[in-house]
Length: 134
Image 1: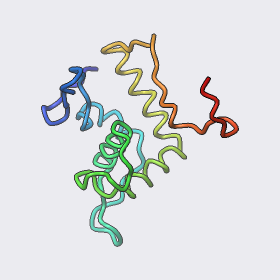
Image 2: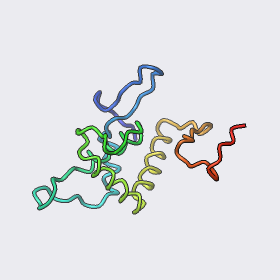
Image 3: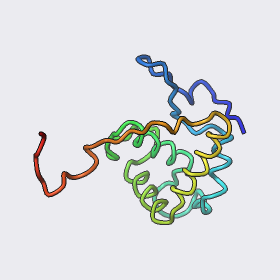
């Protein structure tokens, strides 16, 4: 499966010439959509419906940029809605299963260089709260 992306779906990083997905391409969305439960119909009582695709674009934006959920640009809908949906999809293992499936698709079509990995040390608490930097 190859993913043809529209110009507005990809952004080229001007510093290192890497491509960044900023919108889920149609072919990937079709793969993801099959794994999600049915969306709330529009016109129902309550808060306005934010489509799953828009929510997922917002989730990916936060994961890629490190922005806070409450700072999410309005084009992705409410940051709290995106965060709530992300928490729900994590709890139900939907996000993990979808991520694994997409990695397999990408690896089959483009190949993933598994020889390196990155870890953000700010993501975890220092053991025992120590400050041993020797």
